[in-house]
Image (tube, rainbow, N blue to C red):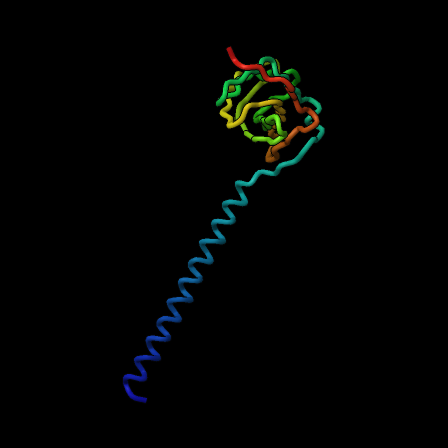
Length: 151
């Protein structure tokens, strides 16, 4: 073989080695990234026994065109750490919001939630954290059917 033929094979081998090394590097990065992500994922469960101690009440609620104002009270004996809120318009379409907060038993929290539609009905589901689980208490849903305008 002449020297120009050898140069082509050498460049081909170097190119293949570079592609394999790059593939291994990207593969390891993807594995590390997915391991970090899986460590951060919380387990979501619904309506466990812990929900029996959860209870919220919508004390006061009103709206203007862009904001829904409400006062939510914890009326039972388990701390509520998130609220999953569905805002329904007159046609039944829903806009969802998640609010991270901390409402201890017997306490209330005033919320102002941005919205894109006139609310006809609101549903609020309390969410609690127990160890690594995030528990959504559907059976303890609070609802408000008529939302007046804020004055």
